[in-house]
Each structure stands twice: as structure tokens, then as C-alpha cells.
Length: 394
Image (spheres, rainbow, N blue to C red):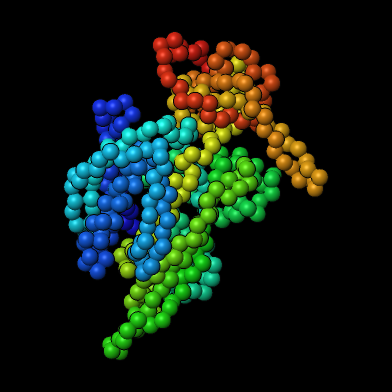
């Protein structure tokens, strides 16, 4: 399957807070319209630059016939594009590619968790009405779409670490104990699910005088994407996306989504355009979400945390420790009570998904126990006197 590429190169500018970002955007050339594809590719490149710079973007899409016919991009006040330069542009294999260089200045610091990757579970997307997949044999469309979504998010994301799941999980239907079990098993707080609400065929388009083929018909691609927080039991993001395209394949012909032939069709291109828009919105929604780590072990003045280099953690990063208790409400449901402590620890050793951290004043962490939490305190600035920590015990 073709994935939309996005190269990012950062170069320091003259001002301490201004940086040049070089990004590449791509768009499919539809019906030979290179001008429209060029505009979409340029917009894609600018959005990628803003995402990499940590500037918040919220896009609103109204999708018709596989094209974003109306889109407004709002950039929050803590970032500003000083200048945009066109580096290269080209059309190749039905795709228009534009590389731009943008000078982006941040007037205020970004959210403290921006540089950390939050682990995000992606469940297989579901077909709401599987019988709609009979024509073309699109029964694997949900599963393949979720894998493509995960690949695209991995490519552009600065703030999430997607992990595809083989089995569907509906976070909203889980009990407190089940949500805890999922968090402990996968080390993830967020779960993304999606439903393909409509992949049906519409009315016949035009007249086909060729007796050996069927008349072209419109086909819909309606999808609802939901991002759920397992810890706070809340919906972080929920959005419906709709498009349609001409389905010119004979009724008896299979067009398996697992193969390139499907994604090169007009319908496949329209579906991929929708997935691109959803990926951008999910990345925007999760970028400033909190990062919480479980305390796995406590040894005197050290704790083992359930986050590591894969999450973007570095030696010297600081975390505040949080007590976690369970209370039972009047309805017999378990509820979580979090109490922030004044204790701050600094990371001393890293592995892929864990980190040893030590109290900054070497005091004992007697009141901290396995199961408590740690949240980002501040991005550590490495100083000479911070570079020496006693080795964490293994």
C-alpha cells in the first residue's frame, strides 16, 4: 500500500525560539488535476511542519466525492509561521509531491508532554454492516484500514506510539478492573477504535453501453473514529468522516483491500484521503494529553517506571510521584483517587520501555509503593552537577 511520506528536517534559525522545518507533503492527482493536487500537497507539508514544531492545529473537514472541498486550519496563538519557502515539487506515479521550508516561531512554550510518546492501542476497525462488503469482497477493509492508519500515524507522529491489536476492544464497555488489566498488559493509557458505518453502493452513475461490464456506481466510505482514555474513562476525541467515489468494478470481481489494486482505485484513493485526515486529527488530539507511568518497583530512593526510551524519555528527565488509591462509591463501583506528592525523581537509567529514577535529594521513598504513578514534572536541563548519579541497583 502507498503511504503518504513526510520528511522532516529541523534547522536552527537566528532567534533562540525560531526554527526552520523542512517537510514533504503528498497528494493524489485525481482526474489529471495537478493544480488541485499541488495545493493539497502544499497544505499537507505545512501541516506537517506545524505538527513537528509543536504548534496546535485543528482542521475541520467537509468531505465530498473523495476531496476535502472545505477546510479551515486554525493555528493557536503560541506559534507563528514567519516564512514559507518552496524547495521542490514534482508529479510522479499519480502523486504530486511538494517540499517546503517553514520558519516557525513559538511565542510561548508548548505543553510539557509534547516530546513524549503516549502509547496508543489501535483495535481492528469494524464493518458495521458486513453484508455491504459482499460486492467487491471488502470483508478485510476494516482490518486493513486500521493497519494503514497505524502505519500513517507512526510516520507523522511526534506524540504517540501506536500499537496495533489483533482483537477488538471497546474501551467504553470495560469495567474498572478490565481497564486496569488492559493498561497493565499493554502499558498503554489510550485506545483507538473505529467503525466503518457505510461502505454501500449508491445509484448508477451514467450509462454503460458495454454489455460485458456493469454500469459505474457511487460507493460510500463513512467512518467514525474514537480515542478513549482508559485511566480517566473519558472520550478524548470522536469524529465522523464521510466520502464517496465511483466504483467501476464489476459486481462479480473481487478487489481485496490487502492488495495495491484496491488502493489505486478511485474508491481506495478516496478512503485513504479520509484516513490521512483522521490521522492528523488524532495526532493533534493526543499531543498534549498527560503522560502517566506506573511505579513497578521501589528500592529505597529509587523507583522503576513503566516508561522508557521508546516513549521519548531521556536520562535527567524529572517526574512527580502520585499516590493511587481505590475507593468504592455508593453504587459499589471502584473509583480511582490520585494524590500528588511533593516527591520528584530524576531518570538515571533507561531501557526500551522502563526507566530507573532517583529522588533528587536522595531521600527515601518510604510512602511510595508499586502501583503508584509518576507524571511529567519538567523537561530536565542537563547540568554538570546533575551528570553523576549513583548507579541504580539492578
